Image 1 (cartoon, rainbow, N blue to C red):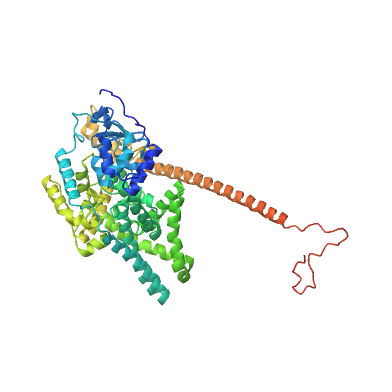
Image 2 (tube, rainbow, N blue to C red):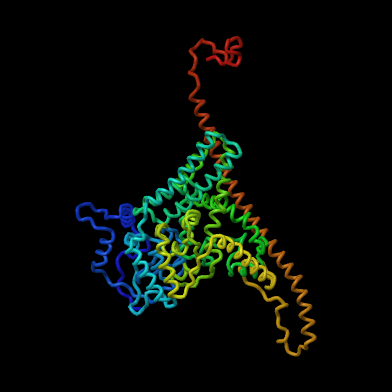
Length: 611
């Protein structure tokens, strides 16, 4: 590689002026300068590209792929090479999105996630460090270049057809539906009281409102309703935080990481459901070989109904959301989420009390959770789950997702997530246009020999349980057949030892067949009993270390709380002392006796103090 002159501003972070300019563009979708000659963001970006610029460094794919570490992240967009190492932690979609594409071509995923890439290029410009050498292909050599070109041509066709333009009346109808159901639940309780039948009925209404709110905030999170991103973000805060009581930033970080590496283990957070479940073909075998058994995974398809489905939203989502807000000290989000609980206490508190209102809130979340779990997991768990294979964007999404047959009820019940393939290929597309795009996507799949899966909803629900049962069987097979683990360190690292039962005695010189048979039988029994001891010892050590870490964390938290309480107590005592000192009476004149503190004969009673 011949090193040429670097462009100006190749730092790893965007300077404040660029951030301000980018934010202003993002808010207004027009340049910040005033006057008649106001260019659009697209025109301004193109004009900047036409300006004379200094020569860029040329890189090969082999050089770029070496920069795939968390502390050294390069990626390629439209043949331009960017160093995003310093920008990753400030990325609005979360640092994992950039980490997962380090050393790879990110052109298609960049275009899929950002509705207006010309605005985002204002952020990218200071991160530009070079471009692909002329002899290098547009993407890695292992990718199907013809499929990549066909998919990009399909996207250009859809943009020409204005498929990415939203019908705002459609989304206003869904928001109205949610608000009407919330208001109707309160009116029913106010008019008919808070009996058991009424409570069950309004819980059903509120569950529908909460589930439909999840689908609506999902649309807003993908910036596919309003042309101005700030309105999408604001409405997502209103729906997700105020109407549902969850953190927007936590959801977006988790969901974008799921979109960019769908069903890629362990990069997709939605399939990292250990230690209670193992899914796919890789995780069960890994757990089985390493003798990991937190629960009996062979029965996971049975306890799925009582663990994963009902508790995902009220427990996992709520805890994750609260932890992120607490760690980041995000007071704005805390205020938004608090408004959800304040609203419920104001509207339902007079009828149910504080405890009853809390029970109502989490009963609704409990019911909503099963709805959301079945809708979201029916399209992913039964599909291909693999390690990173660095496939093209189209193949990755089609193989990792499936559709459910279209009907008016299915569209409403799933929030149009029955078109998961189209949604994952075009996340910023309004959901009411998915059915228009489906035939074109299906045609492209047929052209390149990819299976386009479309199934009935009940079969899709059943496939979740069948996939869990299959994964549990894989775990059981690996757990029973694979050699046991020799030590606690190997248990954590995944390195196993070869037990005597797997040793081939025929390799030993001068060994007869009878000796081989006798030695194998002996070592089989030795292996069984000794490995049981190793497993017990390993797990005892594991539990001891876990218990120690929990105790240390509890002591640390208790120490911090005691310090805080001591500080408050000292502050309270000092304030009280100051108040008492300010309330002292002035000294009496000479010769005047002091008034008694209590006057027994006072008509106000013997407890009334006299001044």
